[in-house]
Image (cartoon, rainbow, N blue to C red; front, side, top):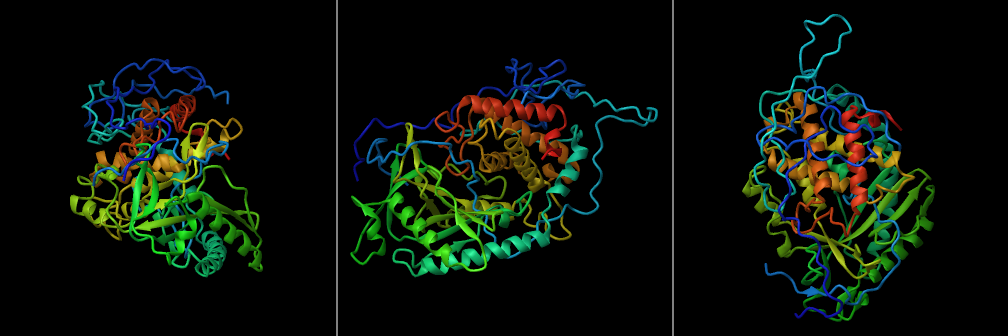
Length: 525
């Protein structure tokens, strides 16, 4: 099929470009205000084989608070664009959090040794503070792997506890969701979702819809109060053909290879293209009508967010539920994913092959186009694969199972998600962080796991260092403006087209401030 003509094709920045060397953490005398301009890096990060960046002794001094197959045919950027005014980009997480059942989150492993600060207090008097042990001098980085913004440092002995590690266990305990509260909230959500699913099955075009159990609820990485849920409804669409949009690798137009007249989705076709806007509009209309028939539960529909694929409901004025429609395709994954899902050295080549045999999904997410959106595009989604990875996250098949060796991978992900969530709450009035979501954190986390595949590199005793490693990597992604989608390496989630540089700089400064002051934001809100 020939690509359609229109405006010149806009290419998303390639994520596999050569990456500058990583900057070192601030040493003593570094800036104290995160809103100041960043200073030039003092030293390169240590070579891969050391855990985390090199710092000078004493660099953790308290700071003053902040002021505040073959590639599918490409359709040209301007082809068939339906522009809608661009407002605030949806910053909700893209991972769908289904709420069926009342599964509790995994508690921290019992009997884990307490984390100690670097250095020794044994020779000091009562009340004397310990000085951190000087870190080894910096060394050169190995070259970054193709498609990754920076090679994640690897944890090797000696294990040197990172400052602030003593707080992390308490933070994780605070983040544990009450089983009772989670059960109560999920019961309410399940009732509403079940009602809507029954109605959708009776509608032409949506008869085969089913619920897809994915997201942080099922990944056991949901944090804070159980008042936000994501639900995905999947609809199998056989024999489809994808036409890539503007070389993004992530956005596509959907066509049917054969379109018999009895195809119930024919009503949503426009010039042989399955219209994402038409289908989402009908999906939204059905839900809006049906919530009026739900008794004993107060359900309202929130205003549509430009560019968002989700229908957002507010239940009993306190529970927010995002419902997303997803097309299910059981064909081979698009060519843009060929170099993605780098789990060969982590989960094994066999696991990677098995995962790529599973279906992939397309959600009606509009691609950004100038000052508006292309309304007919569908975006690839692999939330079900993300769930599989997090559920079976160890190199050892028994990692974190009962009576087996534990790791702190999920704990680090929870802490990273919570850090971003707290900063977004703190600066919600400034709108600098609107476009950042937990999906950015999760993507960076997957890359770190790829470069640190051994379970021993995620020992719960070393939670402080492992978390510091995650923070370091995420900061480097912000600095270089490169965060490749874990499944689509050519799609850069931190490109300037998606998030402005000033927003990335702002978040970077705030995270640096938090790290230098042992994360005071963890105790706020």
